[in-house]
Length: 149
Image 1: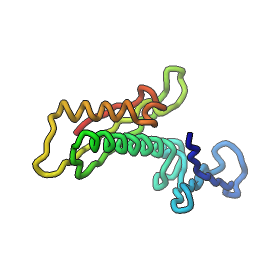
Image 2: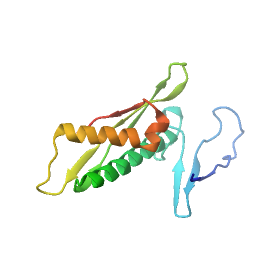
Image 3: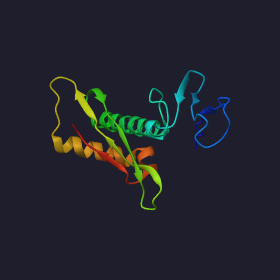
């Protein structure tokens, strides 16, 4: 199987390394082309202008779901012209009382070529299939909700 990697780099900001005294800001490199500034979620003292791991998780799920949907739609002969999503990661406590991403909501919007249409039921079934076949969704188990707009 594939081994897919990132590189992460963090450097202490010169302050004393004590709780609440250091920055969690770091950089994640995807290959040689993309560097992303990452920090803790704003609720945990992170810079809101940077992304955070929770957003990255929602992004990974949204991207995987879309790519799976597109593959299934192409096989079905559905002429998809555009696809967008608004993914939301929800933080809270899991059943063990630990902080976690308790749910990720996807809000996909699919546009088709002019003259092509599918029923709401067929679209919902295809989104459900995409969810069942998405690698990231299978990793996250039951914490994903798909809200078709």
